[in-house]
Image (cartoon, rainbow, N blue to C red; front, side):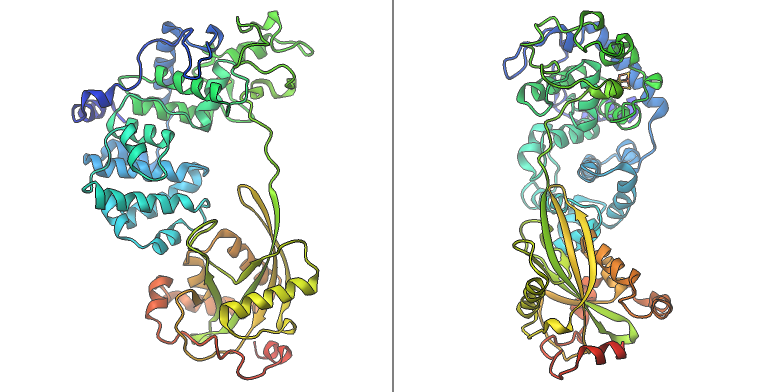
Length: 507
Ligand code: SF4
């Protein structure tokens, strides 16, 4: 955002909103948790001024062109601008910039204002979010938009405090980012990139999730933020962390903050075998044993990591191992395209409201017969019809990693004949094209791919020919499903007793 834009924005805001962060230097400042910071972990006034100047100069030259930055620079309407920045900040949580660009562009084309998003259905939101992961983010964004329209008169909250207080899913980071970038509020932000940069600049090596380190990092960010260009400053810190001060191989030789960086100096002065806190490397003035910000005694120092010894996080809890049995149920559809059965997940919890192949989480590592029986029970529960384990074909395994779960899907295929009409809102038959456009989790797409790559879903050449003809099939699946009066009856799939072998011959 250019300087002139900031001035224009600043005029529209109450003075209080522009100055929530202190402009005082941070040397030897107490943290909120009561820990007194050593000067080793803070910035003097001169260092703060140098950091702002070097960082902003670098950002003006090197920043990437990104659609949300263009919007923040050019959109004059404050609500539209804040909404656009909010969407980008939510999408960027846990997701790389390169992935987000396409999703963001499509999202903003579909819902350019908070009012447009508020009018969308949750299902449409899930469809648009499909593939981005962490689906609760999209749901919260949708809930927030509805709140802005229904309870706040369509006006986005104008300060970080109000954004955090009034909008579901908006935490301290998102609130600070939206308010500084959209409104020019002088407030810092702390995300993963900023944590890394600050911890390296000031040799903060204690667990960064501890309350003391968290408070320290927020204090540093709030004190460093440039009062003239807060939004650009925050974006510059994050950009530096994303492109130069990267997690594994920091590009210190290209860094505009190298002269201020204690980790860089420390590494440069260390010899193999020396310890990070030894006098030759410079150290915290607080006794190392009692400083809550230094690398804690007992923690390993890895010479091969260099500056990447910072930051430190707690040992990750091992992910939970789970097994789910799932069934790709295929039937010949209209216009010769095969169709697949999808069921909707519950509206709460993991992947809430999304569509998936009928699946069942196994209680434990079940024996083959047991898991097939479990799957048949699930299919019966979903469709109301008895399914025999003999009709199932085993395809293989798909492993998908969620944030805290290593999920292994044991994939089966079931083929059936077309049946009669039945109304059921939690079931849906979709063509492959509709499947790809539906609100289905990435794991389900992997499962379909597995079936195709192993030749289970019809003749590959034949299917490919049919898919080329599938170009007119452009209605969104949600609406298509509602309009499709010829959705067929699941109840009657098995009215005729057709043996598995005969079905395979037909397909
Ligand atoms: S000098 Fe290296 S470690 Fe320090 S902030 Fe720059 S890139 Fe990060």
